Length: 466
Image (cartoon, rainbow, N blue to C red; front, side, top):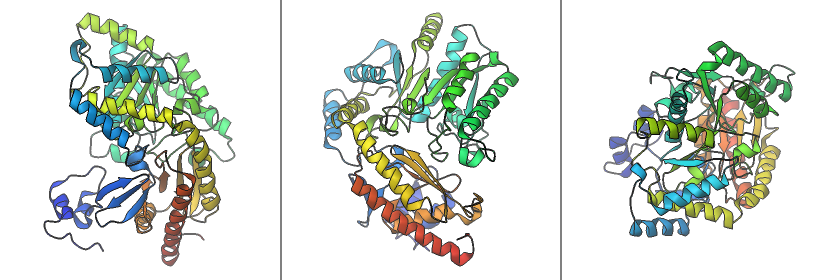
């Protein structure tokens, strides 16, 4: 049992005043926070001086680790030069212009314009509004429904949380909103029929998507949102051939594809964009997180010329495109993002991920694929997951009440790891992109100790087949 927080300590003040995201608030009041005070490279340190390897780069986002003097300098210089300006009513500034140019030039498919927000959730909400506006502007007011996927994660604002296909993001929030549809999750390990190949599974999912569009009416379905690799839903890679088959259906019924690159963008999968790794050709692309290596909040939405022309025509009719945020393209985060992209180029982040990523994938599989508590090890590049299983042969999940993955997270802390638990008792691995092979090996060794400790606990309780 965690000892009570000392009066007037940082932990006690946190419990008294802070409402934490994605947290059981009653449990937090009893147990208190784990408070981090500094970071260095791939490691963070708590207020007692303990060191941890950050296995998920915070929230999939600290791509350059937890210290970088160039990014600090970029922010400081911009704050001295122009600490704030906006992009409303044709105003602009150099960081907004340069970052727009850099992103459009780096896009995986031809894109026309870049729009900026402050988070992945805002970027995806903005994309939905763009799609609705576009269809109204070109005379298709009925074509508004948006398709997402079960177990997808697209954010927590009202519309983006509706896209998200996870129960915790809907329960008690009165979500999803109207007009949001969900099709099947493309996780072969969990949802393929017995003996169904990846190719056949992908074909079935494309057929199910087409059936959904036909049932709703193709003239009412506007777009589909998809992460190249589904992140918070479990690090779920689609089966072979999935996106080409899906896109053939979307093209047939004139349905836009939105690639949510918030996690996969900027090298995570071994290519600059997850869209390149998974053969996606989006009409709209959203990005965030590694855009600024998460030193400051910023997100982006890239739109192709077809979508931009619809927005342009609509704004001429109305007299304005009535969307945007006070901090859209804020000069300080934009300056940091510009410097981040320059660093990625200079250090050849893609070459690094293509070298270290296979080492990480092999190390995780060699160490844990045959472990009796592990159902599946999956991933590519520098993103992976280990899914726990109560019965490996039968792929039987643990009873959620037993909180197997939550226990493993705590055991990870005891072994100097910050772990991220995902739905279905999966543990994510998405470390800073700068992680080296030796640090991967250290991470894997520490995780092995935590997993072995969990095995001991579960054997004593008779909860696992071993």
